[in-house]
Length: 337
Image (cartoon, rainbow, N blue to C red):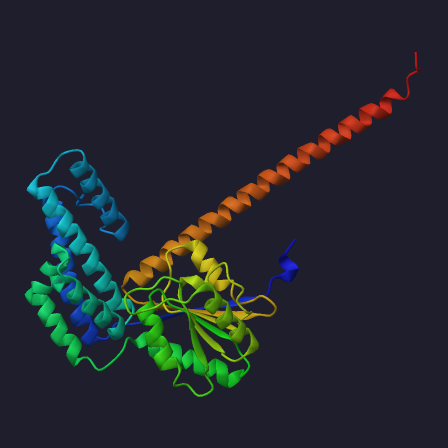
């Protein structure tokens, strides 16, 4: 029914590698993270054979919290809860180092240090910043003079699009606000690029969000051509009337098939469009890409199965209707008596 309104979307997946200097930094974070996981397994709150995903770590947190609420106030449980919180924080830092860039990681570690030094700072944050590895990580960060290679790819793709088609509209999706700001600072340097950002309403510290009226205003100016590059967080994926775009860039894959489809759906509306997904080799990016593609395939299988079921039921209904019609016709051959 809708196929005639759907335009072709060309998909590209661009793989990038983590530079050696950033890999060293990521390795130190991974070492700290792995140590937390080993301790949690030793305590018996994590299964050794199950991958320590964020989802699993949050399950562990709920399980520990439940035991505490049920009256088990042992020191070991409180310690396990703190180690679990440390693992979550280190896992996030590791993801930023591998898939986002120096700016995002630096900003996060600064917030972590502020939290640890505040009167209400958590035990987990204090344990991280007190470690020798954390000090080494800060030294490595201070000596890094480069961003993640993803940003140079984004700049090249945007520049090529604007050179080949100056009236293009481009959206760059990022998972995190710090990355959003970093992308804007670099893409703004491209000749012909008029860049703005679209973020959610919630504020975080000094980072103020955009009210709904401001979001609508940004999108209207993007639609009218005042801006031709929109850098957006997840708020740009659904619910807002975003202009048709020629190019959509995923700074990172998202593990949700729904979000992936929604991001892609921002192009290919009134004309053909292009989607570019940036993937850092050997990182969580690959797992996210695999997860969303697997879920989308499963979704398509279910839709196909529903269609087959629908077709079968329709066929049966048509056959029944035929038999009923034939039966009514046959009755007219008999006398009224």
